[in-house]
Length: 565
Image (cartoon, rainbow, N blue to C red; front, side):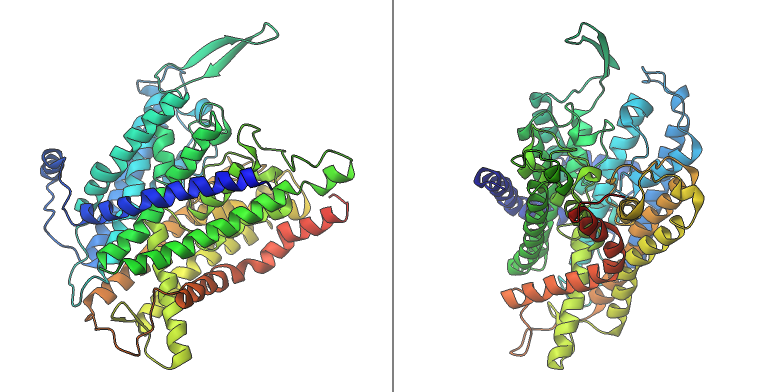
């Protein structure tokens, strides 16, 4: 680790927080219908869809509208992928995507996971990339933001009968937040050298005089929304490590900024909606603390080098550079890794499979903590608020008072629903992993043996259920078993989680909002911040400790002893 490296990390994080402050205020204004610079276009969308933005929805109506939208999105994307070979804008002449891979990909993009069991430049036509994958990048991100806004409104007042209008929230988040940001960031990527063209390939002459065919495509704006929407799916198979997606250290810094700015801003949006910005800052501080801790852990592990390389007498000055791009360096790789897995983005600018065991443990653990640090666009905020309810529940037990948060009593119904939501992740991850490592057909997809092989399979189901989408590497994921089960894990991680969360929102919204009293536990100070961080570590991570001990932890001690598998 170096001082320059930490200065780079500090500068990027400072830019993120600086931009999150006005953006959080803007998103709150957009959610309230106060930003209307595209009002004619907004009204046209409402008219075309028969939407009355003033018509409120209860939590059941909100969830049904969300599920219907996502179902239609899945069907349309699946059909587009299957029929790709018959459709225009296919200069490469790609055939239709096979059934199980199309299912996995459609589910992946609809759930904001963007798990990719294919190489983008070798599988998807320009039409599929633009009209299919990029469109879902916007819609899935806006869906998460809409759900988060609905949850926030539950705390804004007492005796509420509705949580807003899903269709209006979806349209406004796209028109006023995602599209403008994607336009600006996309143009910045074009200026940095990311291609944006309908051309399929370019021919180049190598230094040896040979001919090389280099894939191109409309990449820049998909790269922009893949980060802004915490989607993470790369236009190219190597994702942000590809020189056309991450051409420079400045480009990777902008990608880190993009995948963090909206999740952090939404924490402050929450403070604006409940009219107490201190609440938003408390959430942001917890998120930022975990990002810093994760960055430090990856940076320290990778800068320390691989024990086997050190034993072989290799120069330790650069640390473990296997699987990393020299143009980024250790510091930006560490920050990118912590932010992409803490934010459920899933983009990568280095290959986790080549990390040291402890370095690879960090992104896996950040996903397993619940993708709330700061989490995906929208999903991170409502996931964090679930942990907040647990924190005030624990605080209430310690002092013998009924738990209360922002004037809302947290009672048995809310705690049971929160527990149901939190159990979705470990049940899905550990259940599918246990079955997979016992099936020869699934084990055949793992090239590695021992703890590393277990880590690859555990990471795959953690990434799918956590709607992250990144891959540890090495796993041959394009098989019927993995395409089907990872797709199911994505669906459970998104929708089985959000239904009880929205039920909590409906229950809290209907309750009266009580005034704070002398005995009210303050939820904006350092004591609550520490309690919330502890609850996240215990409830979010403790259930995965045995599996982690058998995977990356065991591998670490084996390598430290100078042995291999």
